[in-house]
Image (cartoon, rainbow, N blue to C red; front, side, top):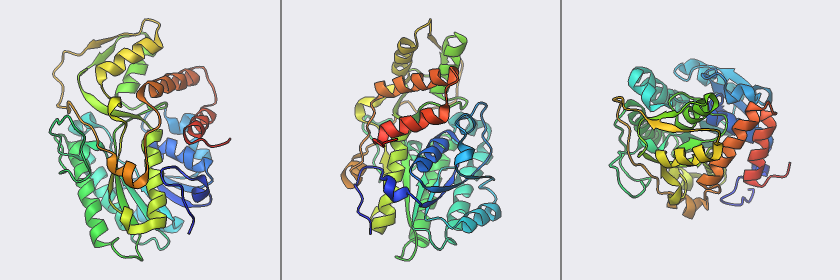
Length: 361
């Protein structure tokens, strides 16, 4: 058995490893696809076509680096055939409807994609004979949010005020049930769930998301219209939780059931900042007349305060966040300027990954 440096993504582990990745066309999925390719993994992605224009999947030419299949996880026959034919060693499930406000407009699709889609993925995984590690990705919003000043731990109750958050709480229950019922012996895959905070980074063009909205307004030299400047979130660069997923998968593969649990991957306490704090920093960093103002409209409910307790990942995985929020915001603005100036975005992302994980390129 290969000895791994706990707490760090190990490229030698991933070289030649067969990885099935759902949601590879999304923002996080595109970054993870690039990282896995850089380490020499054999990756098959399964997802809907990119739903933003532009998209990181397209501008970074992710499709050139892996076996990409467009499909819907709500269709169990398609996802099962795709996964079984590929016969993965590791499964990372990230495909989802990820937006709170969209879930108010499309609640049925949100539940079908997030809950039954996860059922379909895990049911398909049961037929993969070489599969040893499964990471099912959810969100910090799976917790029953009581607006506490302290972070939520992995054993806190699931909940969710809005359809999106509720659906992710359901996904955690589905994952726990499948772990107890079907992935509970030494000859079955080891299944864990991963809960990350508010992920930000270059290449996110999603609707109704803070950083994309800020950058769109800055490009047009218009004020950013903000719904809730006092909302506080666990902001983190996209590479932070991705490193957690990869470290967790390494341990699931090598150490087994002792890591088959839920895990939080969030930033340090000082990086749990308000929307207003983010805005003021980005306005100052962008310059050129950037500004913001308050949206006076009546908007759907969104949690005011939410923070993760990541002491379990620190203690048992030796996983720690590396980039503070100031550095993250700098990297986002630099990335966005690179894209605006027509630089090679695939290379830009790979260099950022290498810098994060101290990889020689």
